[in-house]
Length: 86
Image (tube, rainbow, N blue to C red; front, side, top):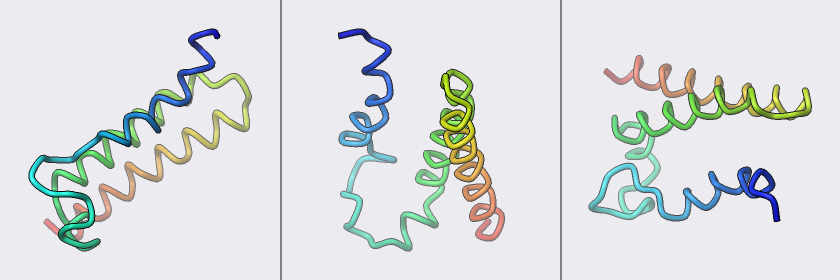
């Protein structure tokens, strides 16, 4: 199997073991903690930037626009939440 066919699976495989910071599980402190924690917002912004940049490598225009749009939305959401909280 060619490597480029496995690359789209990397974000999903990484999400299985990803932690914004160690010490608790995702659901331990509730949804409010996920939205207000600067660590989680940084991860959201970082993943959004990676999607935005990585979308440039998509072959089909529709796929490229969806990936880049999702990345931009994640970065803007993180900025909006951070701006309203801090």
